Amino acid sequence: MKPEAQPASPPDDGEFNKMLDEQLELAAARLPVLSTDGVHPSPVDHEERTSAHASMEDVLLGRAETSPEMLEELAALQAAPALSDEELARQALADGGADGDPSTPE
Image 1 (spheres, rainbow, N blue to C red):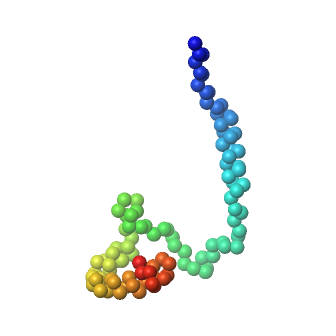
Image 2 (cartoon, rainbow, N blue to C red; image 1 turned 135 degrees about the horizontal axis):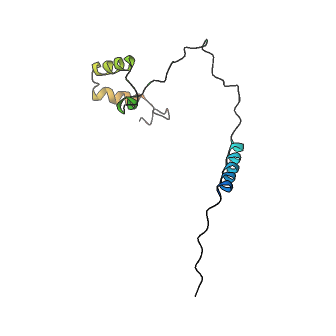
Image 3 (cartoon, one colour; image 1 turned 180 degrees about the vertical axis):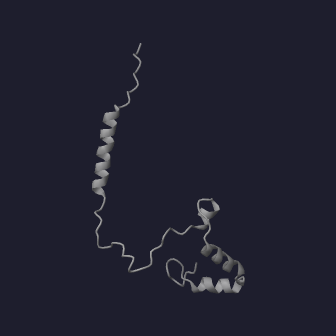
């Protein structure tokens, strides 16, 4: 009769942590070094945003409140006249799409 195979024992936490640290060091060594040439301009150069603008998805999911600017933009979109099919077709043909090629409209 064959002896039963013993299940492999899990590695010691210390060995696992050591292996994990080694893998993280190897991954970090492959990261490119960031240059300071492209640093963010100072607030003197432009107007700083105090907080990130909420997206419609964030508002609908309850992760953010609507801003007055967002409400104004939504009101303007609702008040805008509907575009005719001809105008939509004209705009589609005038726009070259992502590749910028007007011969292949999006």
